Each structure stands twice: as C-alpha cells, then as structure tokens.
Amino acid sequence: MRSFFGKPLKYKIQGTVKYVFLLLVSVISLYPFVWVLITSLKDNNDIYGNSFGLPRVFRWENYSEAWKGASAGRSFFNSLFVCMITLVILAVITSMGSYILTRVAKSKLLSTYFSLGLMIPIHALLIPSVLIFKYLKLTDNLFSLVLVYTAVNISFSMFIMNGFLKSIPKEIDEAATIDGCGKARVFFQILLPIAKPGLATVATLAFLNCWNDLLLGLVVISTPAKRTLSVAISVLKGSYLTQYGLLCAGFAISIAPVVIMYLLFQKQVIAGMTAGAVKG
Image (cartoon, rainbow, N blue to C red; front, top):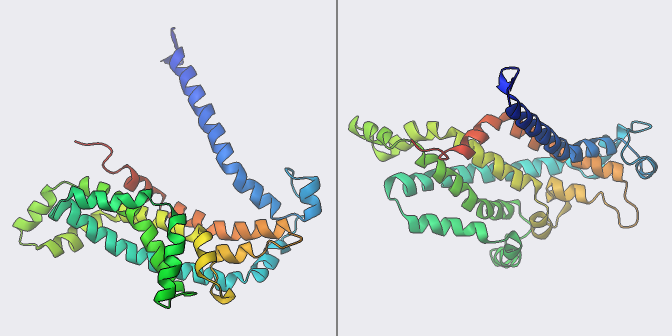
C-alpha cells in the first residue's frame, strides 16, 4: 500500500485501531466512577427509574447526609492516621531492606523469602491475626491495623524497591566509597534521594490497599469511634432499606483522596514501576 499523509496506509489503519481500542478501554474503566458520581446525586426512585441517566433533581444534600451518617470526619482521620503510620514504617523497612539485599549483602534466598508473601491471600491472615492480637491485648486498636497492613504490603513493596535499586548503577556506590562515604551515608545522602520514585510507588500502592480495605477493618475494629472510612461507609447500608444515593455519595467521598494522591504521584509511580525493565 502506498503512503497516506506521509505514512503507509496500513500503519495509519493500525494506529487508528490502536487508539480506538485504547479509547474504548478508557471509557470502560472510567464509566463506573462516573456512574457512582451521577448516582450519588439521586434518590432511590430516580435510581430505579433512571439508572443510567442524569438526575432529574440534583440531591447535593446526599453528601452532607452521608458525611454525618457515617461519622466521616472521625473515620476519615482514623483511616488517614492508619495509612500514614503504615507508609512511614513500610518506607523505612523496604528502603533499608532492599538496600542491604541488592547492594550490600546480595541474597537471592532472602529476596525469594520476602517474595513468598505475595502468594499468601489476605483471608488466610484473618484468624491468626485476631488470635495474636487477642493474646497481645491489641484487639480493637488502630495500631493492630497498622501492623496487619504493614505485614500485608511488605512483600510487594520489597519487590518494587528491589527492582528499582537494582536499576541504579553500582558505580555510584563505588564513587561515593572512594570519596570516603560509609554505607549509611551512601544510603541516606545518595541512594535514598535517587530512590524517590520507587518510594512514591510503594507509598501510593500501599495507600490504595490500606485506604480501600474493608475486610480487615471489619474484623479487627469493633468500636464505632475507631472505624476506618471504608467500614463507616458500609454502615450506610441498612438492614431493610438502603438509600443508594447516600451510599454512592459515601463511595465518592472515600474515592477522592485516592484519586488525588495518584494524580500527585503519577509520574513517580510510572517511573518506579518501569524501573529495571530495560538494561543497558
């Protein structure tokens, strides 16, 4: 085939098909979020009679009622507290651990050991976690959630950081050592600033897992004042009647911090996820 607008026609067709496919995937991915936002402004009658259309009457009060009904202010703070403490612990453990495993005392055995945690389903941790916390008298405590979230996310976080630190040239360590830097100084002053994209990736993915968790929060926390946001929003579902507009408004409130965090660290997450994909 001859060229069309400077390129062979077959490449123009391939490009068009590719972009149409990507557009279709984007619409399919975004539609659930758009539907939740639209539904959050409806009442039950409007939802049942006009499920996929725009609201006949925009019920902005659904957000205020959902915020009050779920005690979202307190629950929001609880979730933020748990997530931030978990992220700090994960950042310290994974960055230091990956530095040792990839650049100081390389050990495939220990790296494999940490990776084995990826194969353990979260449901398998429920009963052991409850028994351990009961023995340690940590039941119904936000710090118990911090411990569980750290344990659940540490394997994948180590996997990400190992790949990122391996992509940093070893010559940087050697040059710093020649200049008189010890291992601690090499890590804190040289490698850690370079590893910011990897840390941002770990923090973002761990934040998503912690913030969106419902199962562990339901099992570990029982006091209403200590509920996380996901658990508090689930309370909006009634036993006999559920106001789905309020429920979707609660979902929209819980989704907002996740979207904001991803938008802030989007470039770092992409850089961290693709680190080590290309050698040379």
